[in-house]
Image 1 (cartoon, rainbow, N blue to C red):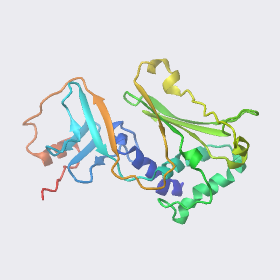
Image 2: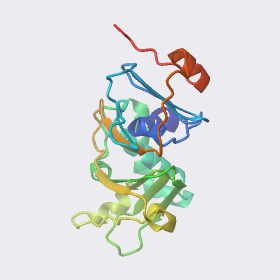
Image 3: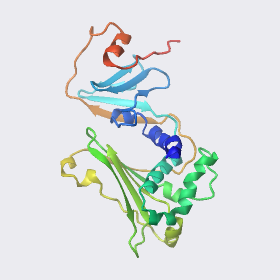
Image 4: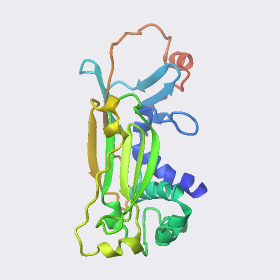
Length: 266
């Protein structure tokens, strides 16, 4: 658990980046704040709502379209392969003990992160085929999904991967193949089907009209990804001018219970 928190959970959080604040995904200390590296943008979630501070001309937030706010926010640097390992760690953590003996190589591969291989992976295992086919789902709405995670094991005679892991929470859904070198060796030379699993966002009648998107991601790279931009749109019902409510930025921050934006004006 210490390894997961220090290495893999941090990478997964950086991959989600500002989406954790926009979708109000709670962590151990509540919904995390988002701060741009240049100090010109800050977003906090309080019990009153979302507080956004931005320097004029920064162009990370766009209110031009009526009823919609468009965000273009950079993520922190992350390593795709480490994000994949985070999901593998989650899968192993809920796996029945009698199955773990089939995943000894996978566990050793996960533990390689302790040997200083983050970002410069020199692994004795080749997991590229597994980490290059990640199904990422997103559903619009105010945190429509409860947290759920499950594993599926291959039925005898099927030409599919031995183990598949699926995760859903708030607005996100992920589906991956859990590496199992021993059990998947029989698939070498065959065309492999990667079943597309129906998740709660697909089966819940109350969510059938919500906008959904699906992307296939390649997380096999061990090179850090820097400055990736997250684009997300939020809708709102009405807009109210609050000019004159606050004496200055510091007063606004105090009344709203957030830290004031302190831009570097040099």
